[in-house]
Amino acid sequence: MTNSQLTVDRYVFLPPGVFIARLTGQNRFNISMRNAERLCERFQQGGLGGLVIDYSGCDLGHQPHEFRHVAQVFEENMPKGTKMAYVYRDSQLGHILVITRLLNAAGLKVRGFTEPRAAEDWVFEEMGENRADYGDPRCLDGDAPEQLAPDA
Image 1 (cartoon, rainbow, N blue to C red):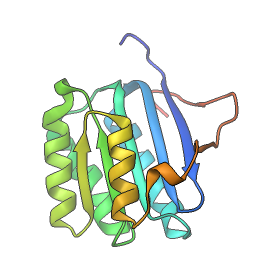
Image 2: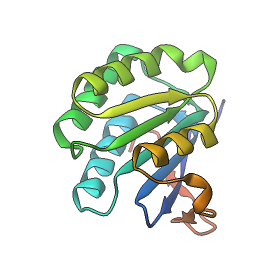
Image 3: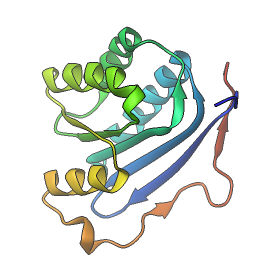
Image 4: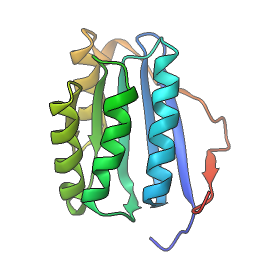
């Protein structure tokens, strides 16, 4: 993608407490770090137990080894027991393999998926819920998804 902006569309199922972030555009290491910190802060407030991060619509502008730093933020700050799913394109497999391995080793339950609905289904199942019992998630951004500057 040539888009220098990153758009994050945020959704939530309350209950049972599943947060979904769909990213579109150019995602860089500094943005991933900041977003990981924000997600951890939000999950620490309570009420959420599942997370789906959908990278399939974005270009990852950082290297798989940089995901070690992102994983460290989640490892140190995400509540234990959080279920996390990553949605990815085939070209992003290296990134997803690194972060899922690191986060699973840290005690979080994490998997990668190529289909968003499969990721949601898995997170709900891991939380003891059935995704089919819940309609559409509530969009947290209304009609204006959050625009993140590439160097913010």
